[in-house]
Structure formats: structure tokens, C-alpha cells
Length: 327
Image 1 (cartoon, rainbow, N blue to C red):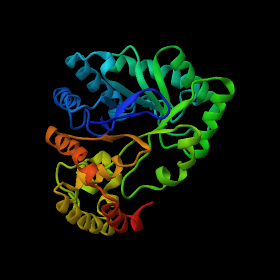
Image 2: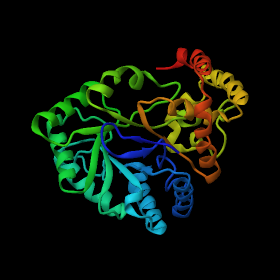
Image 3: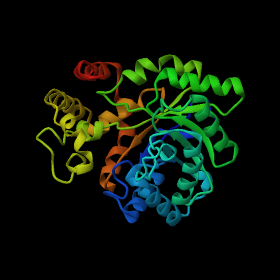
Image 4: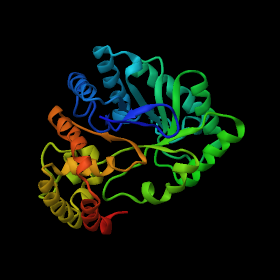
């Protein structure tokens, strides 16, 4: 395992990390989470990703219970969470409106996450989506204040436009506030434009770091959906019905079949090839993996050995297959 600076910060994150979206509470209980966190940690993973909205807060609970059981030194691991959607959806009043990054919500959201995860502070906090109804300056000041209060150490964004990230950074720079350090975008072989083009100037100009999600396109890049939706897969979950059409896309599944030949020639799995392809990008601070069982996690961690095998010639072959279908 190698470690990379998170943007311009001094924080070193493992090149592969472990996330909890979809899996924790829904597919992974505290016992299984503890087992996988321990295996990842033993392999050198030091960053574990979460979000307030995952399983309506229960994902944070599971991860917090696992951390408590493992009794790691707090200096040895990095944990994140993300804010935007909130948890209580019963109220439709303006003051309790969800899908927001206003100050009232953010200052209460951090306390809820700390309580669920049983932590004194969270290393990384993200604005999970942009909020067009709240002035960016209000959000920047609230996130900066959370860090000043010692409840978090660094803040960033997830799926924000380059223009909004730059606006947030410039507001923080102008008012001597804590600047956004990282962005968490979707990034995989079929989803590239934002990371490779839209954010291109931000890496050098603002020092933006990336903690990327969905390296396997929700499982599409494992090849498991080439013959339909298998029982027990992510695509079979009712909560994930919105991605079924994407998972069964004929053109992309045909491309996955072509990638399989490259993977076999390299002596690796499709998943390892897809993860290694992201890991070779020097702009990516860490690739967030997802796993519903230990064997899946162990297979994905095998991507570390594949990364050095991706020569320019092999990358060109991969691009020829996937770039025409990427967005």
C-alpha cells in the first residue's frame, strides 16, 4: 500500500480505501463490518468513508460500533462523513427543509454524526451535494467553523461543479477561513469527464485532492451483469432499482466483455483492472472501494499488484474500448 497527500494538506491517505455506501446495515452488520475493517487495515488501508444519509444514519452506527470493537489508536485511521440530505423527512416546513447546506442544518448534522460514530472528531467532512438555495459563503463559513470548533479536521465537497468549488475556495481564501481540501466525485472507466476535464485546472490552482467513489460502476465493471441482474447483487436491491437500466446497458456490457480479455492477459480480475486503472491517475488521492463480503474486499485489494502492469499500450487498449461510451 502506498500513501498519497490529500490535496495540498499534510494528511496521507492510503491509495485504496473502504466505503460503506449501500453495504453497511443493509448487507453488512457490525460483525462483518468489523471483520472487513480489520482486514483492510491489516492491508494498509487507513481511510474509511461514510455519510449521514447512508442507511438513514445506521451506516454510521455500524461503523462506529466496529471502531469501538477494534480499539485502534485514533491517530492510525481516518474517517469521513458527508452532509446534505439529512435524516428527518417528516417535516415539510421551510425551517426543517432537507437537501440543504444551511448553517442551522450543518451545525446540528456534525453533532449527530459524532454521536452515531462514537467519535470525538471526524477527520474529513463533505458537503454531499451542492445547495443552490443557500449562499456558498454561508456554507463555507459553517464548514470552517466546524473545523475551528475541533469537531472535524478537513472539509471538502462531493459532486460539486468546478465553478462552485472555486467559488468556495476563493471565499475561504478572501476571508481567511478553512479552505475546501478535497472533492469526492464518481470516477470510473465509463464516467470520466468531471475528473479528467472539468476539474483539470483546480488540481494545480487550488490543490484539489480527490477521494473517488464507484470505481466499479456499481458492479457493472465486474462483469456480473452481462447476463442480467443476479440474485443477491447490488442491482437486485429494491433501494438500488434506479441503476438497473445502467447495469444492463448492452453496449457497456459488451465493452466489459472486451475488457475481460485484457484482464485475463494480465492475470487479474475485471474488478482489479478497473480499480488499478483509477489508481494509476496521480490526481486521485484515494480510490474508495465497496464490499459486501470479505472475499470481495480481498479481491479488490489485489488491484495494487495490477497498477504497475498498466503500461501506456495497455491503457490505450482500455481507452479504445471504453472512451466512446464514457461521459
